Length: 437
Image (cartoon, rainbow, N blue to C red; front, side):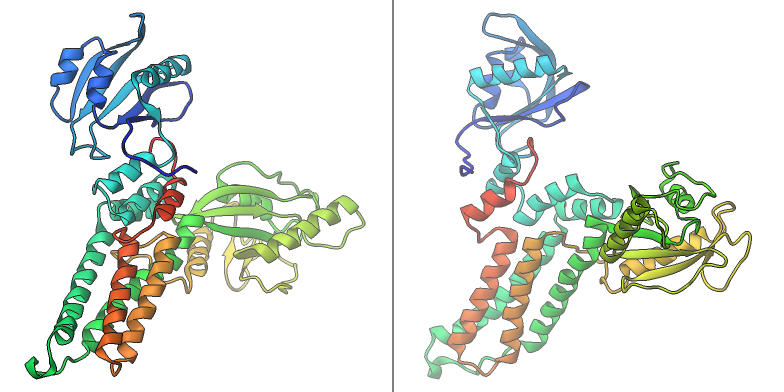
């Protein structure tokens, strides 16, 4: 795609392109206020409006015909989302009306924005660092409250502040070493000593942040959970209970489910794609056997299998996928271990707790005050940790070599925040954003 620029005024629809009560069209760029005033009924009021104020009036085309009744939100330069002069047009959500507004803005000299161009400008004007810019898209695409809260925290600067503190500490170490390199040996009072304890502390802090990526992946991407078992084990009943919908047909007739059903649900805040599968048994019915083959494929691909065992069913697990054995119909016969009755709800809370425990097992801590959700940040932290661990283990290298590794570590740290970056990286990163952001 073409590289982003900041020398043209831009516009984009910030709300969905669909009929609605209200639609918001964002504009940004030098002279945006004056440009829109040419087509606004209250031009004088708009031109004199203070920052972060609203102005009511009508947009009019070149012939003087009304385009729409609007409320304009005014942002003076240095304020607002991008840091540029900007106007947000609050209009009626008529698709025909929006198309007329778009044409009007282009006639006034605005260009339609590319994906992520507003956030790119906010980054270029210092309103956000790269970690905060990435948090914007992560906030929009969050599938769970936990991910949404973590992204909002990053947007407010939690990761930025932590990395700024680490950068300051590394700069102080590097500066003390540079003193040794800048003066002759006979001018130095004492030899430089590798600050191993301080570097170990930084490595520990960065490692904790890095570990949150693996933990956040579960809340970010969700998990695939498959209900498996013999026919009439209660899979469809549990599927309906967990999804809170009557999606699956429940019948005492064996083999009712001949293909899998799937639905999205939440289990203790974790996004889950839940699958109800065909009952596992031998059958002469080719259609049912195809359903069973699909069930077996889903079981192999799952993050977790709930193996439902009704009274009298085999409890033998024939796959390697992580599995929770759930004894069903506990209202009829309660066995040892985890038991559930769909009719009474008995054991459901215990099952949900166990699902969460198994899905989060070994994934690290998601309760940290600083959490990352970006693969780019994760990869950069891996490289940064490698640089710092080399420093700690090679304290006997020459000062010149150690200084180079300090500089390299600081460069990688700058990549995370965006202080050191390339146009290609920025274009790739922001082009994944939605329009209007």
